[in-house]
Image (cartoon, rainbow, N blue to C red; front, side, top):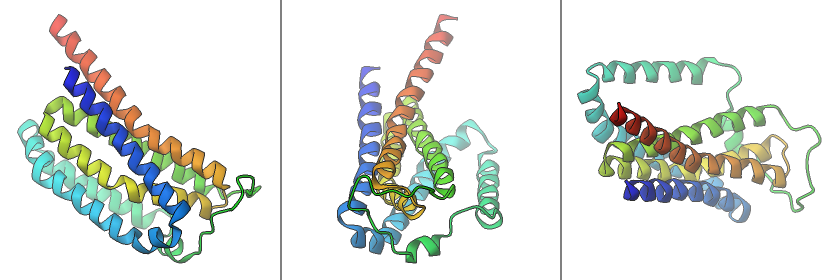
Length: 209
Protein backbone atom coordinates (compact mmCIF):
# COMPACT_ATOMS: atom_id res chain seq x y z
CA UNK A 1 0.00 0.00 0.00
CA UNK A 2 2.69 2.48 1.06
CA UNK A 3 4.96 1.64 -1.90
CA UNK A 4 2.08 2.27 -4.31
CA UNK A 5 1.50 5.72 -2.85
CA UNK A 6 5.22 6.50 -3.10
CA UNK A 7 5.24 5.42 -6.76
CA UNK A 8 2.15 7.46 -7.60
CA UNK A 9 3.58 10.56 -5.90
CA UNK A 10 6.99 10.12 -7.52
CA UNK A 11 5.88 9.48 -11.09
CA UNK A 12 3.03 11.97 -10.92
CA UNK A 13 5.54 14.56 -9.74
CA UNK A 14 7.98 13.60 -12.50
CA UNK A 15 5.24 14.16 -15.09
CA UNK A 16 4.66 17.62 -13.68
CA UNK A 17 8.40 18.36 -13.74
CA UNK A 18 8.54 17.27 -17.40
CA UNK A 19 5.85 19.83 -18.26
CA UNK A 20 7.84 22.53 -16.45
CA UNK A 21 10.91 21.44 -18.43
CA UNK A 22 9.02 21.93 -21.69
CA UNK A 23 8.09 25.46 -20.61
CA UNK A 24 11.70 26.12 -19.58
CA UNK A 25 12.93 25.07 -23.02
CA UNK A 26 10.75 27.72 -24.64
CA UNK A 27 12.05 30.35 -22.22
CA UNK A 28 15.77 29.65 -22.71
CA UNK A 29 15.96 27.56 -25.91
CA UNK A 30 13.07 28.85 -27.99
CA UNK A 31 14.56 28.15 -31.42
CA UNK A 32 15.74 24.66 -30.41
CA UNK A 33 12.40 23.71 -28.85
CA UNK A 34 10.44 24.91 -31.89
CA UNK A 35 12.83 23.21 -34.31
CA UNK A 36 12.62 19.87 -32.49
CA UNK A 37 9.01 19.98 -31.29
CA UNK A 38 7.85 17.69 -34.11
CA UNK A 39 10.46 15.08 -33.13
CA UNK A 40 9.51 15.29 -29.45
CA UNK A 41 5.82 14.91 -30.25
CA UNK A 42 6.46 12.00 -32.63
CA UNK A 43 8.55 10.17 -30.03
CA UNK A 44 5.97 10.69 -27.30
CA UNK A 45 3.12 9.61 -29.58
CA UNK A 46 4.99 6.42 -30.45
CA UNK A 47 5.60 5.69 -26.77
CA UNK A 48 1.92 6.20 -25.94
CA UNK A 49 0.78 3.97 -28.80
CA UNK A 50 3.33 1.27 -27.95
CA UNK A 51 2.31 1.12 -24.29
CA UNK A 52 -1.37 1.29 -25.17
CA UNK A 53 -1.40 -1.45 -27.80
CA UNK A 54 1.26 -3.78 -26.40
CA UNK A 55 0.58 -3.60 -22.66
CA UNK A 56 -2.68 -1.88 -21.72
CA UNK A 57 -4.92 -3.27 -24.50
CA UNK A 58 -4.20 -6.94 -23.64
CA UNK A 59 -5.12 -6.20 -20.02
CA UNK A 60 -8.28 -4.41 -21.16
CA UNK A 61 -9.32 -7.38 -23.31
CA UNK A 62 -9.25 -9.61 -20.25
CA UNK A 63 -11.66 -7.27 -18.47
CA UNK A 64 -13.86 -6.28 -21.43
CA UNK A 65 -14.03 -8.38 -24.65
CA UNK A 66 -15.35 -5.31 -26.52
CA UNK A 67 -12.28 -3.21 -25.68
CA UNK A 68 -11.14 -3.11 -29.33
CA UNK A 69 -14.55 -1.73 -30.34
CA UNK A 70 -14.20 1.07 -27.78
CA UNK A 71 -10.70 1.75 -29.09
CA UNK A 72 -11.92 2.05 -32.68
CA UNK A 73 -14.79 4.28 -31.59
CA UNK A 74 -12.34 6.56 -29.76
CA UNK A 75 -10.20 6.94 -32.89
CA UNK A 76 -13.25 7.81 -34.98
CA UNK A 77 -14.47 10.40 -32.46
CA UNK A 78 -11.11 12.12 -32.20
CA UNK A 79 -10.66 12.04 -35.97
CA UNK A 80 -13.98 13.87 -36.27
CA UNK A 81 -13.03 16.40 -33.61
CA UNK A 82 -9.65 17.07 -35.20
CA UNK A 83 -10.81 17.49 -38.79
CA UNK A 84 -14.37 18.79 -38.64
CA UNK A 85 -14.62 21.23 -35.73
CA UNK A 86 -13.69 24.77 -36.78
CA UNK A 87 -12.18 25.99 -33.49
CA UNK A 88 -9.18 23.67 -33.12
CA UNK A 89 -5.73 25.23 -33.30
CA UNK A 90 -3.93 25.34 -36.66
CA UNK A 91 -0.70 23.37 -36.16
CA UNK A 92 0.96 24.74 -39.28
CA UNK A 93 0.15 28.27 -38.22
CA UNK A 94 1.59 27.71 -34.75
CA UNK A 95 4.66 25.97 -36.16
CA UNK A 96 5.61 28.71 -38.60
CA UNK A 97 4.52 31.79 -36.68
CA UNK A 98 7.30 33.49 -34.78
CA UNK A 99 6.67 33.38 -31.04
CA UNK A 100 8.58 36.01 -29.15
CA UNK A 101 9.06 35.56 -25.42
CA UNK A 102 8.51 38.95 -23.72
CA UNK A 103 11.52 40.32 -21.89
CA UNK A 104 9.44 41.78 -19.08
CA UNK A 105 7.02 40.05 -16.75
CA UNK A 106 4.73 43.06 -17.15
CA UNK A 107 4.74 42.95 -20.97
CA UNK A 108 1.25 41.68 -21.72
CA UNK A 109 -1.51 41.89 -24.23
CA UNK A 110 -4.64 43.67 -22.98
CA UNK A 111 -6.94 41.51 -25.11
CA UNK A 112 -5.61 37.95 -25.51
CA UNK A 113 -7.30 35.64 -27.99
CA UNK A 114 -10.02 33.43 -26.40
CA UNK A 115 -8.47 30.39 -28.10
CA UNK A 116 -5.78 30.51 -25.42
CA UNK A 117 -8.42 29.83 -22.77
CA UNK A 118 -9.80 26.95 -24.86
CA UNK A 119 -6.30 25.45 -25.11
CA UNK A 120 -5.77 25.93 -21.37
CA UNK A 121 -9.03 24.14 -20.51
CA UNK A 122 -8.26 21.27 -22.88
CA UNK A 123 -4.69 20.79 -21.70
CA UNK A 124 -5.69 21.01 -18.03
CA UNK A 125 -8.27 18.26 -18.51
CA UNK A 126 -5.74 16.26 -20.52
CA UNK A 127 -3.14 16.55 -17.75
CA UNK A 128 -5.69 15.60 -15.09
CA UNK A 129 -6.56 12.45 -17.07
CA UNK A 130 -2.84 11.68 -17.44
CA UNK A 131 -2.60 11.68 -13.66
CA UNK A 132 -5.63 9.40 -13.42
CA UNK A 133 -3.91 7.01 -15.84
CA UNK A 134 -0.85 6.87 -13.58
CA UNK A 135 -2.93 6.31 -10.45
CA UNK A 136 -5.06 3.62 -12.11
CA UNK A 137 -2.00 1.88 -13.53
CA UNK A 138 -0.35 1.48 -10.15
CA UNK A 139 -3.65 0.35 -8.65
CA UNK A 140 -3.72 -2.52 -11.16
CA UNK A 141 -0.07 -3.56 -11.11
CA UNK A 142 3.32 -1.99 -10.48
CA UNK A 143 4.59 -2.92 -13.95
CA UNK A 144 1.50 -1.49 -15.68
CA UNK A 145 1.79 1.63 -13.54
CA UNK A 146 5.44 2.09 -14.45
CA UNK A 147 4.77 1.71 -18.18
CA UNK A 148 1.83 4.08 -18.01
CA UNK A 149 3.95 6.61 -16.12
CA UNK A 150 6.76 6.40 -18.69
CA UNK A 151 4.26 6.92 -21.51
CA UNK A 152 2.80 9.97 -19.76
CA UNK A 153 6.16 11.50 -18.80
CA UNK A 154 7.65 11.23 -22.31
CA UNK A 155 4.91 13.37 -23.84
CA UNK A 156 4.88 15.96 -21.08
CA UNK A 157 7.94 17.84 -22.38
CA UNK A 158 6.35 18.56 -25.79
CA UNK A 159 3.08 19.28 -23.97
CA UNK A 160 4.84 21.96 -21.92
CA UNK A 161 6.42 23.40 -25.07
CA UNK A 162 3.06 23.47 -26.83
CA UNK A 163 1.05 24.91 -23.94
CA UNK A 164 3.46 27.75 -23.20
CA UNK A 165 3.96 28.57 -26.89
CA UNK A 166 0.23 28.58 -27.62
CA UNK A 167 -0.47 30.98 -24.75
CA UNK A 168 2.25 33.36 -25.93
CA UNK A 169 1.01 33.05 -29.50
CA UNK A 170 -2.51 34.04 -28.46
CA UNK A 171 -1.37 37.18 -26.68
CA UNK A 172 -0.83 36.21 -23.03
CA UNK A 173 2.05 37.74 -21.10
CA UNK A 174 5.00 35.63 -20.02
CA UNK A 175 3.84 35.88 -16.38
CA UNK A 176 0.31 34.70 -17.21
CA UNK A 177 1.54 31.98 -19.58
CA UNK A 178 3.91 30.73 -16.88
CA UNK A 179 1.12 30.61 -14.28
CA UNK A 180 -1.30 28.82 -16.59
CA UNK A 181 1.30 26.31 -17.79
CA UNK A 182 2.23 25.64 -14.15
CA UNK A 183 -1.43 24.87 -13.43
CA UNK A 184 -1.43 22.39 -16.31
CA UNK A 185 1.75 20.78 -14.93
CA UNK A 186 0.33 20.44 -11.42
CA UNK A 187 -2.89 18.88 -12.70
CA UNK A 188 -1.06 15.60 -13.43
CA UNK A 189 0.21 14.83 -9.89
CA UNK A 190 -3.12 16.10 -8.54
CA UNK A 191 -5.02 13.66 -10.74
CA UNK A 192 -2.68 10.80 -9.83
CA UNK A 193 -3.01 11.34 -6.07
CA UNK A 194 -6.77 11.93 -6.22
CA UNK A 195 -7.31 8.79 -8.31
CA UNK A 196 -5.18 6.67 -6.00
CA UNK A 197 -7.04 7.99 -2.97
CA UNK A 198 -10.47 7.35 -4.50
CA UNK A 199 -9.58 3.83 -5.61
CA UNK A 200 -8.09 3.04 -2.20
CA UNK A 201 -11.25 4.29 -0.47
CA UNK A 202 -13.44 2.28 -2.83
CA UNK A 203 -11.38 -0.84 -2.15
CA UNK A 204 -11.63 -0.32 1.59
CA UNK A 205 -15.38 0.13 1.28
CA UNK A 206 -15.79 -3.11 -0.67
CA UNK A 207 -13.74 -5.00 1.91
CA UNK A 208 -15.84 -3.55 4.74
CA UNK A 209 -19.02 -4.80 3.07
